[in-house]
Image 1 (cartoon, rainbow, N blue to C red):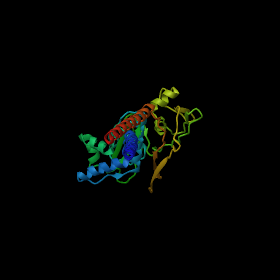
Image 2: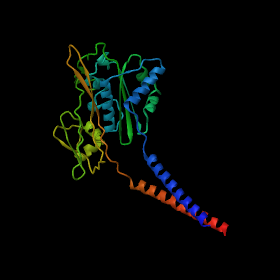
Image 3: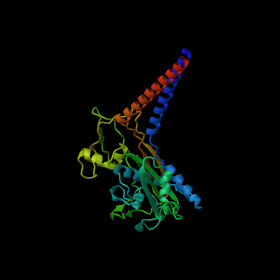
Image 4: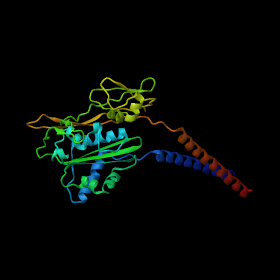
Length: 332
């Protein structure tokens, strides 16, 4: 009888351990959201589509990578999905401002096309491309025989992912056509002005507030996305009525921030230099802010997990006790 009781007790302990371990594992894996795809996942999916149509794959342009990523950042910061970018600039405006040697009649927009979309954070790059194939306009961006280069951008903010691809045809010489005229506002857009000033994320002060001092060339949307917040939130915290900011201004960008011990901003810059015998060197910079802010754990979700585990333990103990009682009853 004692041996049977020992076996039963051991079985109960093992059952409790296994059930508790599986429940904790489930809670951890179930709560982790699926990560969005990378810019290169987008490009690979587009080029796979082109191959299926018998077309040559797009070549990657560093400048187009810059314009696409910048627009993805802007949409994530504003929470809106639109082809109109910061300052009301159109796709053509942004490409010219970044120094891209866009071919075609610039007064008609040039040879370029842009696809954008957004969705939940779990939306993959392949799903974005599949969505774009659903209509002729977006499909043509990806399988156009007249475009040869591509750039892609991805940004996640507020639980949503924003995808952008910029496709274009450069001039035969690889030299920009020169200053263009904005399709939207009619203002002159000089080429080669697409370099952004990096935003260095500061650490919280004693009150847990993040105060950013604006540097020359920085924009409100760039600051917002670097600190994983939105333009509207920064404007609300600082009583701003428009998007104009000035060097030296100290902006409250977040309140009560708790950074994880490993939260470090790594400003990755990819520099592409294009040499020419008749023009000065052109440089495009791609900014990749990777600041990680510690998420605030929900006490409600934590309590539900603990309650779930306790419930399993109680059930296991009850079942084990019943098993032992039945075993003893049979022996007697």
